Image (cartoon, rainbow, N blue to C red; front, side, top):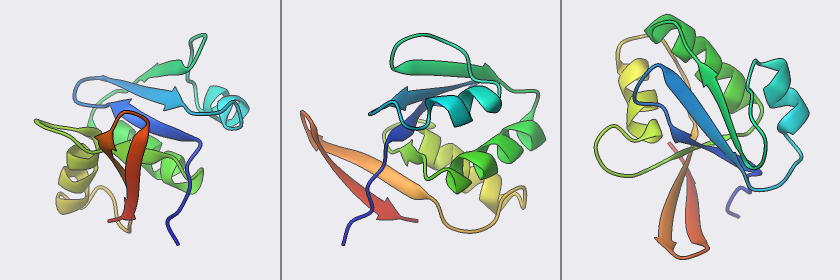
Length: 107
């Protein structure tokens, strides 16, 4: 059975991590992690790779997925941090197959 997600990391290639909510369930937990914003897009700045890795770990605990895509997608950033030894363990990867159609895999 494919895991379900209520939010995913949409952008993480710079100093800002942006999470898109698919439902409002994780909003309070994300705000507790320092995310800000109204509507479905929440953002938080990070201070380097170690800080981003800690944030990614907290997001995996919440069941937040990491978007696949081209050129430093959040899923690729997660894998890169893991290769550098800053993260360990699996994460949820979300990839779009079409409009409102996606696939979630454990990486």
